[in-house]
Image (tube, rainbow over all chains, first blue to last red; front, side, top):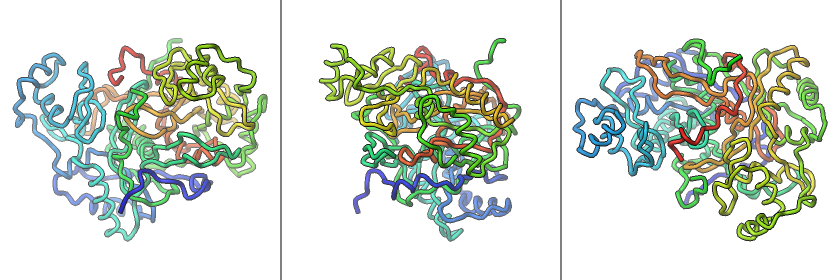
Length: 266
Length: 266
């Protein structure tokens, strides 16, 4: 079955609901380890906090805990850096084992300066291939991004459906820097059940003029909204968004990756 | 009084509130015209909808209505394109008067292809200098971005304070495309009262490791969240965000512009 590249709103009203949007964290999640049953942990922890999942809730989960549950945690002591990594590490004044890991997770280096900006095997352009020391127990451990964040999102959504009986969309997020503007924003690496892109091309504005070139990166806006409650240092890696009106769909976040040939911003 | 470049959270708890975030539109705003008293229109319309502003609410307003109220609406018929604009318009198959306006609003052209990507006089990198036909009455009219969106935000915040007696932060937003990723997201062009950037450098993660390089573009995340309720075609250009915990501050959105010399992503 061919998938549409993007999704269209049901009607103008689909995005113009006057009912409020609500966001809240699932408090009290324990430190996640490999082979933890993440969906069960989520629903149990939510339940203890008095949270009952509702139909069409959107669960935004920080990449970090998905990576941990999938065993994407690496001990730097076990990494043998190549000569290339060693020489690059020297230039960047960084740990050659860390650099080695970044290069392994990347298809190309965009820029090697104070940090390494790379294009990961997924196609994400980000600092250090998304590899991170923070919120990982142990001095010597780092997390890698999930291998296939869209698949991780689909699996989590399917498990939540079984456990709750509700259709819950899932977004897996991480904070990325970006060109032109300072600061990190939370973006969608993986998605299931919610439109990644909403295509308003052909829709009309209030004056009936056709709206050109208007595709909204809905999954990124949802991730950014959840980011407001995901303090990096506060241990709240799971946020529920309730009340957003959307057309349920399979629409992977990989669609948000802009092919180089249509990237006029580079 | 010297202003801090960025803001720091009061404590880890400042961003880890377990209380929900609520977003809702101000429904029923009329078509905005030059010299309309926008703050009064906002508060009256909100009041009719049963909305009472609360202390530390954040009002996110689409650039379009700020521009209209400030008279930043231009009739293309009154624009005389230069020879440079005419030749560029021919290449881009666009209206030479529209191109002329874009060039007037820009300090440089980043890319001239199907659209013009420019750096505006404010320093924003965006398509067509943010000039837009949509949701402007009349076939021949366009809106320009506000001249100084931070000043517009400060004025609106000050007026809201007078009218409501409450400290209400203001963000003026627009949807911009970006490199690497597809789709538009709503970003902050102007801000007053809320941290544009939140500096977590030096803060510690849950395992007490120092968080490096972590500055969050809070104003952009707030704008993106509000964007979820601002359908381009639905006439809801004003969204209230309630329940976000922040340290009130004067922190202009111009701080979000990344100086070229620290832009490793370009």
